[in-house]
Image (tube, rainbow, N blue to C red; front, side, top):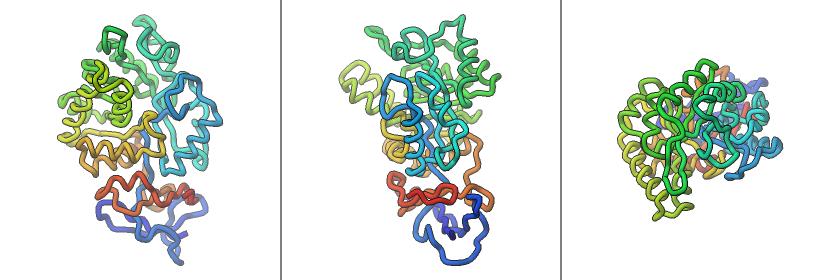
Length: 353
């Protein structure tokens, strides 16, 4: 198969062929079969997925359904997912070492870590300061490269409160890093985001109250920010915009918009669905990031190039690279909504769409 690959942003198009091993090869001659007139990316990425469920269902994941969701990602052009944990290790057990014809590339956390009263009851591993080191060490060993901490959580009548202080977060990071895992921290309230950045976490999930100084610190060491705009907006609607929680989250989203509209160079923003929409629809999160002020090119890269770079994966249209491509009928850098509607998907040289 001969394929024309036209990167977004005006880069010169190239033509490659698909080898029997599912990798790109130099053009072999013959008629072009795919890609003429379209723009292409090597793949889309969901950097905050939960493939154990279709929505917030507080029960263990089912392997069969996880495999179905994983294949749906491929059909939607999502070739890499970072799963940010669940109440069990079902996603890790199901997708680790899954073949590329059945599932995206995968890394993620197993069971989420919190404290008593600091998350949905019975859903997370609950620890205290004395047990934190062992719990994080076990979470690192059970996950696929990640540990997920719930940094803050609302308590009835008291508002959103921290689950961990700065020293505890720093301990968690040191333990996880020594075990070869990265740390992601859920934070939607003030204080914890800045503590987590100072503690050296690798990814801030939501991060509604990050500061410009926090972003500069994250850029200096290559950390990621996954704002999950659609999830935050869905929570505001669920809580009610006039509720105390709704007002807090709305103020946080205003802060997010301010940060995104004046983002320093080097800050790595990634796109994540967090069950607000299915992972194959990560393009809708890209559109939301643009709506809140992120430069369109950086928003598209948030669901593609930036995420591949963050995970140190090669995603390129070059001989020897995997023959993966997602095609669009418009230049995504000019119109990011194009990511919501891929016109064709090629996975290891096999057309899925």
